[in-house]
Structure formats: structure tokens, C-alpha cells
Length: 354
Image (cartoon, rainbow, N blue to C red):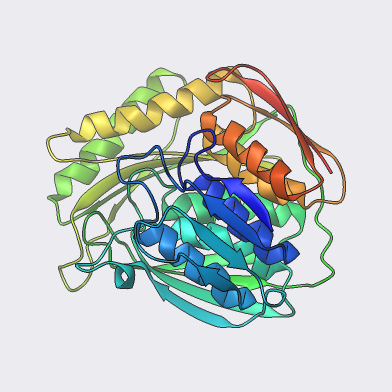
């Protein structure tokens, strides 16, 4: 059994999710200690516990320590990942409910199910647009298209948006499994031509002008930088009228062989224009740097690239602590070397060498 230090690097849930995915894929039993030790609320929160239970379900793992607040977890897979239909609800793991991120749960089980013997359908309820996690559209429009380029067929659908603190959103992921799957490596050192730039301004339980102001500010800021786009405005309020209050501004860019996404969430007392400014600032920093891979996608790519059939390389606009942490976690459980050139907070180049 391999012991993994969950407090390494940024000390959040990233080490846990990567370890669970690789353990499910390889059948390697693991013990994770000091889970999220550096966080204000250390140990397993509702979304992390849901990820543990989801990973255990698909590979019939024996688990010890799967409870809220636990900082030590033992996870021993009992079989290879099994295709099937699965449902998980983050709110069930905590009294009073939870808006824990559904996208992070799906990130944990997606790749193991890609090696299962047949198609799978996974539905997760919880938060779809919450802080410290990729919004649903980043999964749909950025991560899944990049996986498709590497040979993994998966698609997602959002039935209901979920905001902090109520959650209640619902996302379904469909994955085509193939036990003998061969994933293609990735070489993205230059960005090339921008072929598509789209914006999405969403709001729920708020006046219509919030979404409109986010959209207009985005068009003004990017227009001043010489970029033209029309931002779609979406009222994401559930038909029931309940389910949370929130807003988000998201930007998506795509070119030959690459996709990128940027987002910012509204908050109490935060003007709509500031929400737009946050997403635009991240986009423009990436745009002006010239690197094809944005900072959020960079750490997400490490796990699939570790499973590819050859060496990969990509340039990113920013080396983050998440990237450095995930590189360490991948190396603990695979015979893969991850080389990162560049200082934290600066542009860098990443090589994944199976």
C-alpha cells in the first residue's frame, strides 16, 4: 500500500482526487494522510467525500475513513472500473445539504470509466457554479474537447444549475469505455490562430440587468483590446424559482487543437461590472502571453497525459501551485516523470514523459 501525503503542495483536494482516480485505474491500494491539512476546514468536506464514494463504487473498493472531517483515508480497489449507470448527490453527505462542486466529482471518475468495459452514465447533484472549482461549462467546452482530441469520447449535459449555498444543480456525464484504450499524447507549444471566442453571462434569482451589465462590460473591455464578441445572456433561475442566487461571467476561446476557459462568479455586494472585469483580466493575461494552455486546464491535463502512449509537451500562461502539486501526485502513483520549466506565477513549459 502506497502512502500519499495529502498536505503536499497546495494542500487541497487535488491530491485526493488524483490519487483516487489513479488508484481506481491501476488497482493500487493507497493510504492518504493529512487530507487538506492546510485548509481552514481540514479533512473531507461533502464534495470530497462524494468523490471518495463515487470512486469506490465504480471499482468496488474497500474504504476506511470515509466520513466528514476525516484526514486519513484507506482506499483498496476490489476490481477494475465497471461501466454502468451511477447517481451521486453531494447534499446527502452533510446535514443541511451542500453546494459542493459536481465537476470535481466528475473529474475523479471520468478517466477510470474511460477504461471500463462499455458506456457509463454518471449523474451528480450539487453545485455547478461555485467558488474554487471549474464551472460546468469549463468541463463541457474545454476539458472534454481536449480529452476528445486525445481519444476519450465523453459528453455532458446540465439539467439544472446549482449555486452556493443551496446547490441542487444536476449534471450528467456520459463516457464511452474501452479497456484497451490508447490515448494520444499532446503537443501544444504554440497557440496558433484564434478561431472562436464566446462569452456567457448567467444569473439566477437576480434582476435581468445583472446579466446584461456583465455582458456589456465584457464586450467593452475586450473590444478595447481589439477583440470582438457577442456575449450570450442566460437566466439560469430554476423553473421552481428556488435553488440559489448567483451570477457568473464565462469566456471560452478555441483554435486548432486547443480550447481555453475563464470565469468569475458574482458575490454579495460585488458589482456586475467587477465580475466581468475578473474574467476578462484572466483571459487577457493568457491572450497576451501567447501560450495555448490556460492555468486552470494545465493541471487538469496532467492526469490524462500521464496515461497517454507517448511523451507530451505544452506551454501554459502560468505555472500554479495546483500544477506543481498535481505533477507530484501523478509521479507518486505512475512511472511518469513531469518536468516543469518556469517559476510559479510565470509562464512555463510542461513535459509529461511516460
